[in-house]
View 1 (cartoon, rainbow, N blue to C red):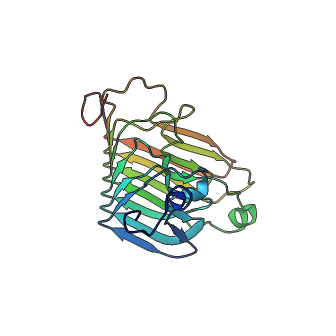
View 2: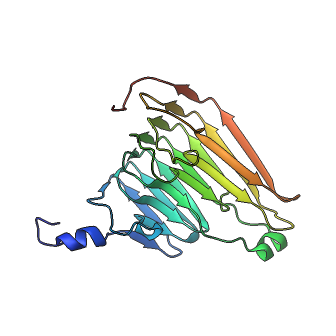
Length: 231
């Protein structure tokens, strides 16, 4: 873009082309995304894809991401199928960052909440850093969340919490929603990481008497080799 004269140096550090969604679907396939620079002011709104809330689907397949900001950001959650992608974590702030929304108890207590699906399937996460946000972070809004046959080479970790982190505190008296976390068939290869302080997956779930969560961790492989990690 610089070589074509379409952006100047100031725009390179202040502006970013991205997808901001409002109750709409999105399909991305066979594309490569790369951040040229960190924005001057790093913020949640610097994410590549911002989808505040939607029950429509975002499908991302066979893409490569070499980003320095957040890849996917939401406040209230959306339906996501993230499959067969390559994610360079070495400078990435976060792959999925869900934060900022407040529960509407009138909906949860009077009706059965429509389930959100977040599916991460057969992706390859590679590269190491230890000073960013959580790699995949859910605060309050998740439904049926599945991690299937992914490969984690090296790791991205926050110095404060685990790379994959669920934080849920149910303030509603009656919550009809059923939630599930499925972590199945993944390979976690820590490689030559200098140190590792936190668990890969952390769940903090403070529920009401009515809410329900199922956690399934099945057939995963955890190993330490030198594959895909640089000193």
